[in-house]
Length: 174
Length: 176
Image 1 (cartoon, rainbow over the protein chains, first blue to last red):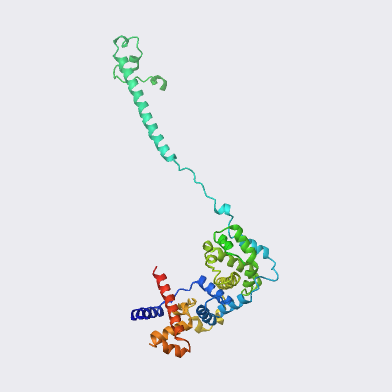
Image 2: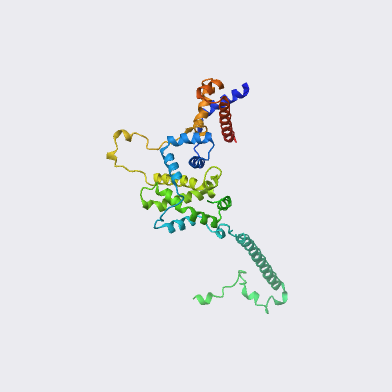
């Protein structure tokens, strides 16, 4: 072993002594099961063995695993219910793989706004056209000399004194 | 015993594989849980806890099983007993009338301390720890260690090498 290697190994060892190892349950289960089955390599067997001796619960688990016959001699009363509950934990594939198909995005708001502006513009257009048409008709009627005195009804609508429209409901109110 | 194909199908979340697994190992899980349960009324719920744990997080625990390291029945027994014990601890805290608790005990923090292992204890065998301690803390030579432990110097070097590989792998994984 070179001096550099020795120095770096020493540093690593000293660093490890101040570090805590995260206790990972999955690794611990495999360690204990491997120890119970005697499938670990000698170093691992020794390491896990030391842990098992120091932990009564782990020791009991290992002993139970080694004594296990792989099942139960007599099924308890609710065994089928136990199995059904456990089976229900994983959903059917047809449900787990089903996809929700989304509706097409709603465009109602856009159309609604467009219709509002279109109807407003149409209303303005119609009102303008009507106003212009009525105004031009009136102007035309008043400007024709032949119809201004006798034959036209329009002059009768106006009060000659004030020039405003006459009040035809005057007699009815009294 | 479930073969690898069945385990792969399980890990993919196939309903048929899961049902077959449950039917095959429910008896074993019930037997393991019975050894931990305080009364028979707990067995059904504790068994369900075990199966929940096995398929939780997309079968994370079940995926961690390695057939090369242990038999499935042995592994399931360990998982079932540990899960049942955890569930009992979580669901039914031991309650004692406060008058029965000595005054001195009340001063103790009720939170159960989390067990922590120092890295060498978690990763290395007692023999490997001993050799590294002798080598680096007591500044002993390989030949001296071999003589003290009554083993071959080559065994000392081999144990040292394996221990350093484990430590390096741990710190490398930690930094990644």
